[in-house]
Image (cartoon, rainbow, N blue to C red; front, top):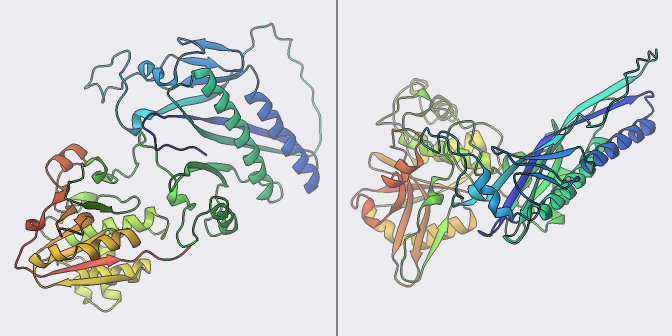
Length: 466
């Protein structure tokens, strides 16, 4: 278990393949398991051998932890000093590559990546090769094991201390991989064990679990329930589905969408005010994405897509975020619109968002009606309670505009309130700085709303499912 809540901590993550190769001369299940277990034991021995090498990514630092050999550093080098050896890429340095960099603020600066490698060549003379031919029927199993371990270090830890922790973590992960491999083995077919990291509610923090690749979340329900019991987690929400896997901050998302842009904002200060925010991860969907020109009519569609992305990334649903046409077709299928609605540029509102969430995702929603925008300032208690109990993004539509509410800062004593708004009307690139500096994601006061327009709010409910 690794906890990443401290700014003074550094997370070391080591990744790299280890090749599992074994020859099975018998199809007897028990004998096959013994051979596979011996092969895993050999891999654990390799991790503890002098051939094991750890390479600090984007740096000249190379470590042979079991030989006590350190290139560019010493065993007593503090872990936090390794940041200075990591090379800046061209994008970070504005096209200029420099030799070293200073530590960056934020969690991304506190994640140090290493590659796991095995030294193949030996310094001593090798004997001449000998060829031997044997004719027999056997099965040869081979798999590339994707090792992926994380450990937390404190500011006082040295690189030698950290290497000891990493080797222990790699050895333990091989034991867990062996268990998963044997448990899910079918005949002579192996399912590759896959390590996944999950960030659990504090104080548990970041934990690593090994699942067999290719086995669905549903088929892993028994194992997931056992993990819930082990970590004393409630059974009313998924924590160990693959969609819940932790995404390290220094890794870009492949789909190109920004996640949780509100995280870099400073919360407003109100007298006796408390902050209530969306729980979990969502994608920011806005005008002009996905090669769809919906400028002027698609804001509610984009807010709905943001909500759908939340349910997908929390592991409640497996389907992808629906396109504009899929949203329109869903409204036709439930009888809300005529067939000509598909492919049109007609607006939708909160009631349609509620219908689509129900039809495509099986999600129920509450609708809050506000007769005029000035009344929204009195809805602080209801909105705060929603983010505490449900934690889902809220779609709000009024007049000709739709927005997404990601949270509120509300004072129970004074009634003051501020709204965290994600604006789907943005038409630019996925530039986090522009989006937050220009207020496309930002805190707004009660005067943000049209004081005389009526508003409908769609409050999606979190399913109580495992």
